[in-house]
Image 1: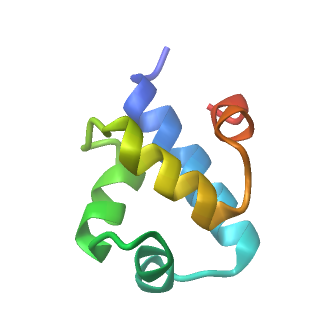
Image 2: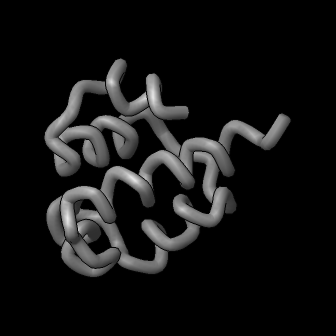
Length: 70
């Protein structure tokens, strides 16, 4: 089974693409750096809960829905 960070990153990228938003636009929506978003999507980052909540809000989904895709 893939590392949870990789699965989370793939789910995040898929949802971001579904919204038709670039990494840079998404980073702006989240208030995070674009390179940080890239690291998340590649499974290189171990996220803090505060940042996970920012991502969910920017994706316009609940935390539980975000994790459902993981």
